[in-house]
Length: 172
Image 1 (cartoon, one colour):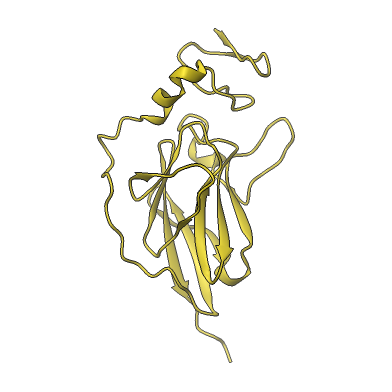
Image 2 (image 1 turned 90 degrees about the horizontal axis):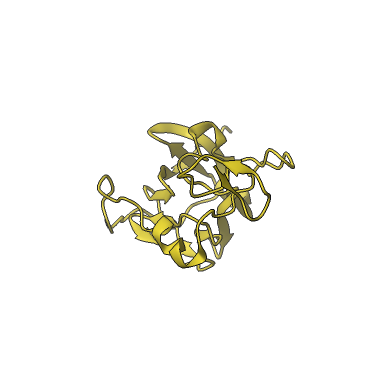
């Protein structure tokens, strides 16, 4: 058993992130090792050319593990969406709650990343996550926004989600 230095929860041996509080269970000097994931199943740096702008009737759809429209939001009213997993201790749930997709086992932090709207575009921001956030195979620098485009793939630890912008017709 490995005892979490932050909350004292006992975790199984080999676990790198506390299953109770999400704190890293490795020495900070080894922390880079948790960010260097086995990328054999992921393409590195695949360019995406989807639109970064959206119109007045655009829906942001987020598909998780091949399931389309798992989460849907009106792109024009987004200020900030938290991507992560629920906190069993406080009951706090992010807007994009990935708990039902084995988020703990796949290395997703409680408040792993954010999607924010600024100047007519959506941006992805890594929130100093323990296992890193990747946009189309490129690792994000923590707290530095990157533009989201239609068709982008986001990897949070080992969990991949796909971003899609859809225009909805007006019913007049």
